[in-house]
Image (cartoon, rainbow, N blue to C red; front, top):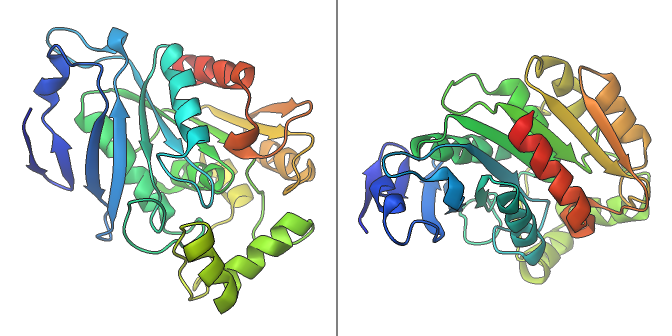
Length: 277
């Protein structure tokens, strides 16, 4: 196995993926367009690796706030998508896990997702789908609307448990989250309690909201998924998102919030949609 620096990425030599160890995960540190180092993991589907090329769909998974590439719920989602025949890229957003930088809670994280999608294409995948959970769901929507580079665009997008609009405080969990993000004591709790390093400066300017992003995504296939027992965002959020553009909407009975609440049956259906949409 060899490694080296190629453009924005420090990556494992793609030729190693066709060896006897071809289904082993590969770790890398990616560099975003604004210079932040992002940890990422690539898990090739055994069916996607031939003697001469990497083929098939790669699914890039964007976790929720306070998550990371190594959290159990993210690993469970990655395994479920791999079982549906996809290769999978997971990564930690800035300020999370082993990545550098500070969390901007959905703003500059679009650059992190772009870096992960580029890496999947560098590894040989011509079709890349993105799926995001909660904050990651809002990032997936904004990435699909804003990214113009052919090497970093998604071919299909799924957003799970995402907010439709910013600054929502209508539920107790969201009021607690705003305290964590906006108060010095809250940011200390984020750093030491949730291992999430949060930018102290407020957004300036305020980024494009998820619901404003949706009309800009077509003709890319878009799926919006939300649980009817989500304690963070009530059902008006997914309905606003789906109603803002050309989107398929799944309202899941009994489901709570994001990757922690996604059961095996839902992840299998998501995997099928991401590989076939």
